[in-house]
Amino acid sequence: MNFQINRRGLLKTAAAGAAFGALQPFNRAFAATDLVWMTWENLAKDDYLAAFLKGGDVSLTKNFIGTDDEQFAKLRAGGASSVDLITPGLDKVEYYVASDLLQPIDFAKVPNAALLYDTFKKTDLGKKDGKTYGIPFYWGINPIVYRADLMDGEPDWSVFFEGDKYKGKLAMRDYALEGIMIAALYLGIPKDKMFDMDDKELAEVKKALLAQKKLLRTYWNSIGDLTNLFASGEVVCAFSWVPPYYDLSARGLKMGMAKPKAGVIGWCDTIAVPKGVEGEKLDKVFSLVNYLLGPEYGEKLAFGGPYAQGTSAALDKLPDEQKEKIFVKDLSIMDSFVWKKNPARYNDWVALWNEVKAS
Image 1: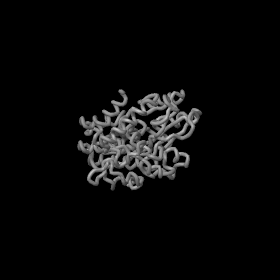
Image 2: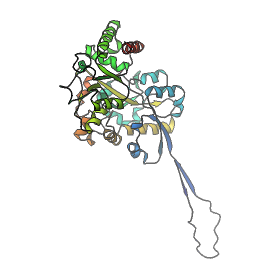
Image 3: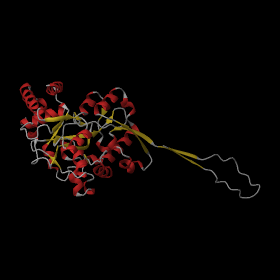
Image 4: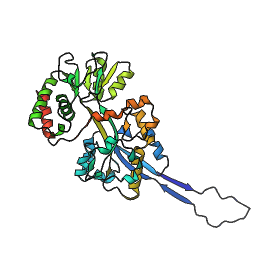
């Protein structure tokens, strides 16, 4: 963004024959610092960012991603030199750090980070050697969503593995990591052991997933497709993202959302700064990071998502109804969260998942 002020039309003839010396035009150029943010489209809406950009000293170029893998691939291919801020998953930050793509966060320049929820302050994810490389930015849960008008009561994880009552009307996401996590939760495998299961435990998981497959209507990939299956009644219960619950409730369907006591899968994306951003630009980047963790952005995100940011900065701005929608009215829900991690044997997990689907 360039602003140019020219002195023109300011010369008036004071009297006939009056002469002025040569006056050079007066120009001042204000150049805003352009920051490039690689992120999800739903996080960079214009009205979310308007309060930060109104000063005019920063402009923002948005580089939207479709998957975290795509973002990682772009940075590894050299994109880090042209990107100032990225949005990796909390469980993926370690890959970026291992590839030497990120720089640690300077918390002195991000005062709103002091308002991070305790769960995020305590987690080891996004950190290495005592330094934070990805600040938990926004988060939510992936619950069980169900047609309350077509089921007898609130389900738990066992509905996907036991009994025939809802056979052919259940759905599971086609994702090895989450699918195997859910089987482990059902089997009672401890959370601290879940991502380091041995052969015996993986064999138990496979047996449970084979039993599950017989009960499923489908493995879903598109949340839009799942929403349509709910609407038609072809699926009455699914491991899901939150949107179908609100979407179909708004259409008048009686929907339910279950958060099993055995554990709820939580998700979180972070804000991270690529290595190589420095000087005045780095200061502007941390200023943006601080805004993204602050009350103005948090309020917009809470209503527009609806999603919760990683800090409590916007809590006082939200009515109880909205707090409940983004799971911050009762923060004890975080006690049951199982955050996704990267299993050391993930290739074995993927192979197991594919074997089950092909059976």
